[in-house]
Amino acid sequence: MYCIKSPEGEIIDSNQMHDPFRFRVDNTHVIDGLNEIVKQMSIGESIYCIIPSELGHGEKGIKGDVAPNTTLSYYIQLLAIK
Image (cartoon, rainbow, N blue to C red):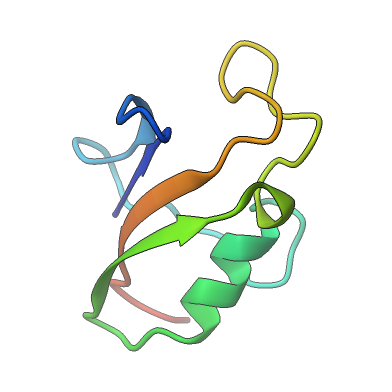
């Protein structure tokens, strides 16, 4: 489970009411900061973390969703590792 917020507290993305987000660690499907955090977590652990722009979407951002150079905050709960 995850919830991503902008520095102003606006929810950018969340899967709170949906299936868990699945991804392969060290793949290019997620930002570097998320890869690094999940590698340090244990199953069942929940954390709140702040990811600086350089480990997020950087200078490019995501047009219409994440402004360039945005610091992101995540709430993450690791449900399983396969």
